Image (cartoon, rainbow, N blue to C red):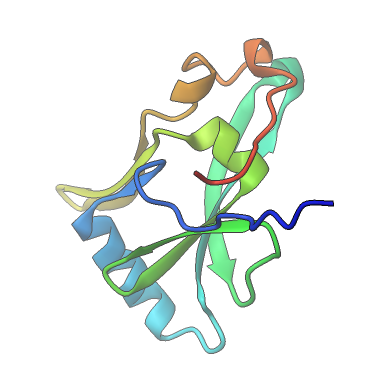
Length: 125
């Protein structure tokens, strides 16, 4: 048996803009016990994949983490295989402000549909 260490530090696999990090930090500061946010992937099959974010109180054993401007952004190793190359930004247009995911599913051909079935992650970097 080898003693291989799981690399859980993200560097350039995903990107979080400075404005998005600022907004995420503001959202988590008032939430007791929150350690950061998770970017996740759900769905699959021929209906395609979708993504989202949620608060994290305790990271999982195989979470990868990006530490950016005071906020921890977690992605599990399997989701990372679908989200590698994603950029999370925060944009304001008139009265509307929202988080924007750019380049989603770029690692799987950009469609997030059946062409990506069977992809597997192998760690964070």
